[in-house]
Image (cartoon, rainbow, N blue to C red; front, side):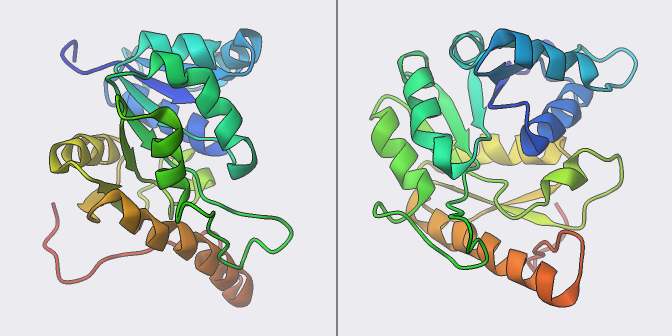
Length: 221
């Protein structure tokens, strides 16, 4: 799979980041896990279980991980999104950034609370600047499910202004074992970001372990 781009998982030591790292490494991607310190990232990379023959992810600082990759997946909490984006901004120019940030504001995380920019993804694009191509995805999939080998009954909506960039992200979604669907321009990311809070409320109300979404009427892809 030498033709596949290197992917940096920015903030990759958390549940979502580590889950994506192990699945994408298993699918043949070279993966670099980024964190505030290289030591923390290296520990997280060493703990990952990957299939025999797959390249093991390696750990770096967020900035060095961003520099080493062609595609960056940002998997950090909303509270630290701006700080982390500032770390990687000088190294993200000309690259594709897949932002997964959901604007959850404790303690009322089951209530949609979008930022002034309209969505966390639009805020990311504004901060990273015009030279960075930003799409958003992975808002509505439970992070802990990505860490297991079982099939995940969930679709992933992908948002971005360039359909070709969305298509690249959809390939990555498929490599992670889910079905990705075009969700339209980046401003539409607000719908999926807000829906995460709705799903948290559904999980509580129905006592389920990570409800997801499934779009009907579309043939399996």
